[in-house]
Structures are given as C-alpha cells and as structure tokens.
Amino acid sequence: MKRAFLSLLLLFALTSQAQRPKIGLVLGGGGAKGGAEVGVLKVLEEAGIRPDYIAGTSIGAVVGGLYATGYSAHELSQLFCQQEWLSLLTDRREDLSGEPYKYQDGIAYIFGFPVIDQNNMAFGVFRGGRVEQTIDSMMASKGCVEFDCLKIPFRCVAASMFKAEEVVLSKGVLPRAIRASMAIPGIFKPVVVNGEQLVDGGMMNNLPVDVVRQMGADIVIAVDLQQNRPKNREKTENIITDIADVLGLGAVANWIFSRPDITKYNENRQHCEIYINPPLPDYDASSFGNQSMQHMISVGEQEARKYFGQFKKLAERID
Image 1 (tube, rainbow, N blue to C red):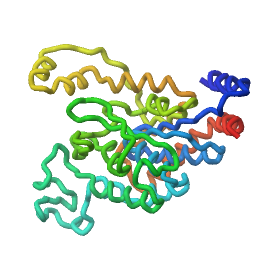
Image 2: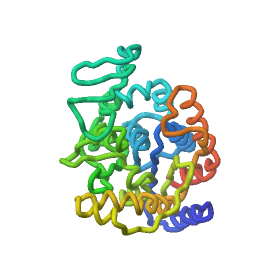
Image 3: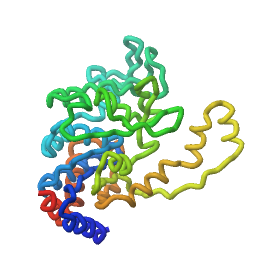
C-alpha cells in the first residue's frame, strides 16, 4: 500500500503538465467511535493536508459535514467531548429524567426517554429531532446549513428503506441529509427526503470510497471504524425471498441474505491510498461520554501519526 502511494506521487511529480492531485477524505460509520475520526483530522491539519472532497456515512457524515462547513479539528474535539450525545440521539427530555413514567402530548416517556410517540408511529423508536436541531445550530454558527455553501464539497450516504438502494445526498438542507445518513433502522425513525424514506447509509455503503472517487479524488484517505472486517456472502435464493418478492419486499430480503453492503465495504477498503483503521476493541457505537470520547479521539490521533510521513510528502507535493 505504501509503495503504491509513493508511486502515485512520483507519477504526478514527473508529469509537469498535470494538475495537482485532488485529495478525498472518507469517514466511515461507527456511532460514538466517530471520535477517532476527529483525532485523524487533527493529524491531517498538523501535516498541512486539507481535503478537496469529503464523503461520509452515519457518524462520518456528522464529522465530515461539520468539517466541511468550516469547523477545525480542535473545535470538533471540543464539541464531541462537551455534547450530551446520548440525550441528543434519543431525544431525551432532561426535565423528565427523574420520572419513571410520563405521558405528555401524545408521547410516553420513561425516565425522560420517549418510547411511544402516537403523533409519529413510523418504524423506529427515536425521532432524532434534537440531534438534527443541534447540528443545524452548529452549522448555522458557521453560516452554512445547505450543501451549496460548504467550504469543502461534501457528500453523505443514506439508504432507501424499502428499495434497499444507496442514496448519495448532495443537495438541499445539510442537517436533514446528515440525520438521514445516521437513521439506524428500528432505532431512529426514517427521514423523508424527496418523497423517499431514508435510513442509515451503513446499510449500503459504510466506507464510501467510491463516492469520493466519483467526486474527483485522485488520492483517497479513508478512516474505517469497523473492528471486525466481515466476509462477503453468496447471494441466495429460497422460499423466503420468493415470498418477499410477492409482497413487494424482495429488495429488502435480498439485502438480508446477500448483504451487498459487505461486498462494497471490502471493495472500497482495497481502493484507497491511505487506509486508517483506529483500534477501538473496547468501544461500540453507543460508547458516548466525555472520558470515552477523549480516549477515542486520542486513539484516532495516535493511529493517524503512523502515516504522518506520507501526509507530509503529500502536503509538500500539493504545495
């Protein structure tokens, strides 16, 4: 991988008429482990690397979207450590956190967590409204809440809930798109965008290297939060998929049995020049909290420093 990277830089150096290489940054999904991506950004900034394009999925869409609006890695580190992410993601009412049960305005709360919302019975427990509002506020403070005004071109990946197809979001209101990209099926309610119900992009493309390539990236730096790399599955046909076809759910059934997301993940992982996989075996997608977040940011920074020499060479070539 390192030899291929250096060969690519040499190719650009020897071609006097070539434009400078465009750098694409890919930020994968992984819930709270996204703190490690903030640590990687710190090292990229220190090395003098500013990506030309960013693509992200789920928490990677949150980090990438905020970075594209103008937040520095240091500012993101502070945001991630200070925010009460558990309350934001679950729409928890802090004023009801001490009450075992409360029914108010059509919503049933248990210790402040909304468990039943009769106003919105869509598939999923949490609405995700608070996290969308928070992201909107963060971006508004930088004067940018839509794709068109971003300082760095950005794409986030969601998935069509019933078609089981990848949806790359590149236009419109940014917080809404990010909220769709992180709507884990069954946990968060789908987000309707252009008349389509969208859920977490990790369902189809958790490490969107191909997306940033399509944007124009020549050299791709990918941050993968997966800890156990899944193996490809063979597509299967059985009576369940046959019944699903009759019910109009064939796409969903095929996804369950063949897992095309795994195939794409393994392909994308091989098609980047610098692949960073921070070791976070003791953390999962729900490991929010100030102390845990600080440690995950530190792990991401330490892992990225292994590639600091490559980052510096790349920055010098660009300059």
